[in-house]
Image (tube, rainbow, N blue to C red; front, side):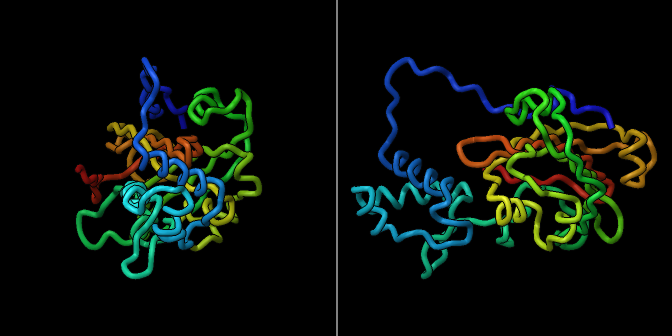
Length: 257
């Protein structure tokens, strides 16, 4: 499998330098404090956070300000409101978000889940383009994972996944295969790493010998290449992934609003 081209690695948008003192609305400041508590593990995935009234008292602001901060975090899938029960820390174990980054849908039939098969999980020195994407030092240790996702016994997705080794110490192919839930759920519950957002670059490619063999298609078959960089809290990149999608019976679906 050829190295991932640097041009295919998503990059965070450049932030223009401020020309003067930055102003942040009060609710955004409260939002930042809530994210700080989430990142610090004060409230675990799936746990109930304090009420708006309690948080307002804690931060010395109005409930309306807290509500607005929580509304934004709920829109970003960091928190989840449950009618009559309160607000909870979002988790990848939730059915409606566990596949939030997988946009591949079947042409016919229900979306449903896919069968996973992990081919390997190896520790190695980070290639230069991987180190840059994950903000690591050249030569830092990383994990390289190869897996397939299949529907009705037919491989549909072939993934190459890169992770920094330090946060995922002890991760093996056997451990990945034995975990019943989604992979991001494993990262969240056993390694304390939660994927918050992702950027993708998508292009059409032709299957090379390896991807053709894994996906059981002829060499040269049109595939969709999806390069994804996923981040945890404070925009820290923690996963670089390149997927090859067979779209002969599937399509890539996205919602724009």
